[in-house]
Image (tube, rainbow, N blue to C red):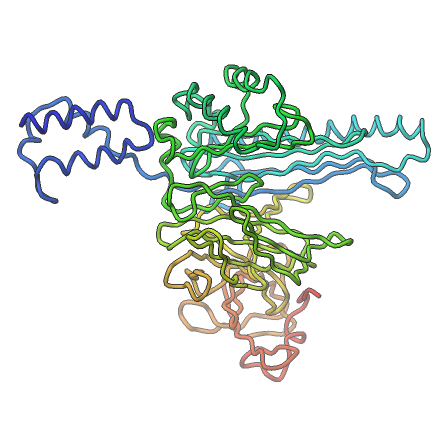
Amino acid sequence: MRKKEKWILWTLLWALCLGGCSSGTKVEESRVESGATEGETDPSQEETDPAGDFLEKNDPKEEPKLLSLMTENKMDSVGEEGRQIVSTNYRKVWLEDREQGAVVGAGEFPELAEALRERNEKEEQAAKTFLEEANTQVQERMEMDENWQGEYTQEQDLWVVRADTSVLSILESEYSYTGGAHGFFAYSGVNLDSKTGQQLKLNEAVKDTGRLLEILTQRLPEKYSDVEFFGDWKKTIQEELEKGLLTWTVGYGGMTFYFNPYELAPYSAGVQAITISYKEESELFSEKICQTPRSWATSIHPFLEYDLGQDDTSDTIEVGGEMDEYSTYTQFWISVNGEKKTMKDKWFYRYTPYLIHSEDLDGELLMVEEVSDNDFSTIFVYELNEEKSGFGEPWSFPDMGFHTYFEEWDEDTYIYGKEVFTNPSRFRLDTRINLLGTYSGTKWYSLHPSEKKNGYLFAEQDWYDVLHFDHFLTLLIPLEMEIPGNGETLEFPAGTKLWIVRTDGEYVEFATEDGRNCRVYVEENEWPLRIRGVEEKDTTEIFDDMRYAG
């Protein structure tokens, strides 16, 4: 091996031993320096050399893949004399197995699935404990003051910050009120190694805690110049760092550290949060967390910062809404670095926003689901341009929402969850359909630059899949129906039970009790609807128990 080449490889070996987020790039660069053209083998590499062996074994690792997650909102309460006196609200989260449905514990990461199950059980038990203890306190208070009309409450929320095969990071918030001048709220981070299900330790993510302490103590007073910190706030951070008590999450662009009320400053100062990007402090972080998928979606939480446009500066991204006296949102706004765009004349009850990054697109997108009466959903897609202060008018998709999953195992056991949007390259959206009843159909989509005029939404299939619920239609008359796949028809007798499993907006496909599939084509040019080939009867004379919403 020539001296120059050997010197380069040994230098790279040393850099790989010390480097952090940029180590993968350095390995790639070593192959350009050798002098061989692309696709050729450099003869010098055939010699035995420890540096060459090291580089061969330490090629950049495979890009992490994204996890598929579901969440479920759980509520419980205690009432007395027609009013609610204690209430709880918490969120479950679990891994989904795409081939078998949302079955807890299934999939390629059983240890992670088990860790999430344990987390869910703890949250459920904590909610039950709160209900019991708070109810006892409320009863005692009402005995002392019969005119007391308050309510004790505990509310939890969560945001999936990152979900890939390296790290699952979740930001949780909890608010509780059990009397006094005000309630109390705090944030916590759940950071799990996706492969083992174990809690990710700070020293597995951060290589230099001394440098971390330096950054935090420098940036906090700069970012929160109007906050009057406690006199010993720096010592508090140092002690929490040494004891492993810091609150943090791992994102796709950096790590965020959170300081709750009373931690560094008074309650009135709220929460302080500092995000340190992987780019600006590349030597601070481990390769494990720096290596991220080329496309991802993350829940927009109250402290989100990300480098829009990839120009090495962090941008603060916020969303919110204005409510009327009936707790209905009438406005929705987006803010990037303080520049706000407000959409007025809105009317919805809740919203779910995601920031989307894809190397196939020119910039980041914002996708928001707004939900109003009867779970009527609308998807909005916004472009966040590189100037970071402008937003185009959104694309609107009425009757569409993020995928909802329901599976009933028996009368008392079921799963009802909302899919967490993590993968812009393949995701599901639900659409409300009104053919032989009202139901939800699911279609797979991806975000693709060729579909910019349509909000980047690219449908990967022409049909909608319909979840196989217990509800079925019953034939009132014998009916000849098409057998999918061969074009033949077969007459099915009156009394046949039919479960809707698929539609493309024209045909409706059924599954029967004996496992056969059959299909009818619906004529929508008049109401009641009619079936092609049986125009003398409307659908109410053919099918029993069609259920329409509204």
